[in-house]
Figure (cartoon, rainbow, N blue to C red):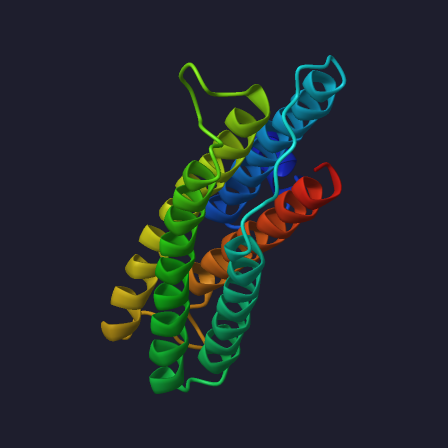
Length: 195
C-alpha cells in the first residue's frame, strides 16, 4: 500500500463544497470591512467636529423590505427541498424584486440626505454624513452583487438545475442574502444608536 494514498484516505475535510467555503470567506472579509468602518465611525465621532442629523425614514422602511425579501428567499429554498419548482421561481422572483425595491429605497434615502443638507463631500460636507454614505454605499454594492447571484440562480431554476438534489446554488444565495439582511439590520441599528 502506498503511504501517500493511506495518508490522503485518512485526511478529514470540512465536508463543504469549495463554493460554500469561498462564500464564507467572502462574508468574513465583508464583516471585517464593515467592522472597521463602524469602528472608524466611533473613533472619528469622538474627535469632535461631528454634525448630528436625523436619519431618513426610508431607512426603516428599507429594513422591512429586506426582511420580507429574506422571508421570500427562505420560502423558495424550502420549496426547492420539496421539488416545488413553481414556488421556487416565485420566491426567487419576489426576492429579486424586493432587492431592487431596497436599492431604489437607498437612492431615495440619499436624496433625502441631500435635501437635509447632508452631503458626501464638498465644501458643505461633514465627515458624519460621509460615513453614512460610505456605509450605505458599501452595503448597496454588496446587495447588487447578491442580486446578480439571485438572477443567476433564478435562471438556473428555469433550466431545472435547482431542485431537491441540486441545492448548492440556492443554498449559497440564501446564506449570502440572509447575511446581507443581517448586515443591513446591524448598520441601521448602529446608525440609529449613534445619531
